[in-house]
Image 1: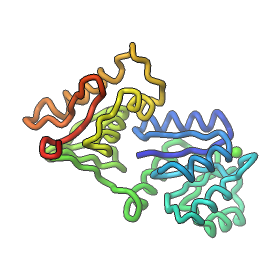
Image 2 (image 1 turned 120 degrees about the vertical axis):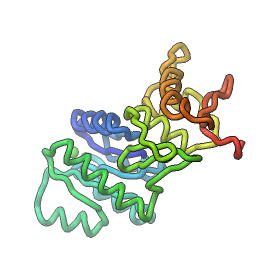
Image 3 (image 1 turned 135 degrees about the horizontal axis):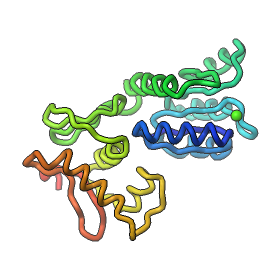
Length: 227
Ligand code: CA
C-alpha cells in the first residue's frame, strides 16, 4: 500500500517515512505543501498523512482540493494545535482522523491501519490475490494455500508491488525505486537477492511457481493460465 506524508519538519518527516517503510508500506514524502499538493492530486495513494501547518500550501488546502476533486482517499492530520476550532474545521473539510503532536509512532501506525481497513470498504481492495496466494494489506500478512508465510517488511512490499501489477514485467529499476526508494545501480544485486528470498518463501514448496524471471527485462508474478 502506498502512503503520502506531507511534513515540513525534516526530522519528523524522515522519521515517519522510515517507520512506515519498515512496517512494509511504500512511502512518498513531500517536505512542503506545494509538492505535497501536486503529488496528492496526481498520484494514487491509499492514505495521506498531512501536517496542518505548512509554510506554503497548508494541510487544509490540500484536503480541500482532494475532496473537491472527489478523491476519497483517507486523510490523517498531524497537528501541533489541539483547539476545538481546528478539529471542527478539519472534520468539515473531510479529514478522517487526527493525531496531535508529539505522538508515539505505535499510535500513528495503529491509526493508519484502522483508516486503511475502513477506507478499503469504498476505495482500494483490502486483500490481493493470485492463484492460492493471498495478501492481507492492512495486517501485512501473506498466506499461500491457507498457510501463513512470514515475510520481512521489504519482502512484503516487493510481493505487494508484483501482485498489484500481476502479468506485467517489472524492470529492476522500477522495483528499486518503488520498494527501496533508490536509483537502480546495475552492479547491485539487491533486487535479485530479494527475489530469491521471496521465491524460497512463496514458491519453493509449491508446484505452481508464481514468480517468473523475464531474461534481460525483469521479474513478473503470474499464473500460467494468464500468460
Ligand atoms: Ca509543520
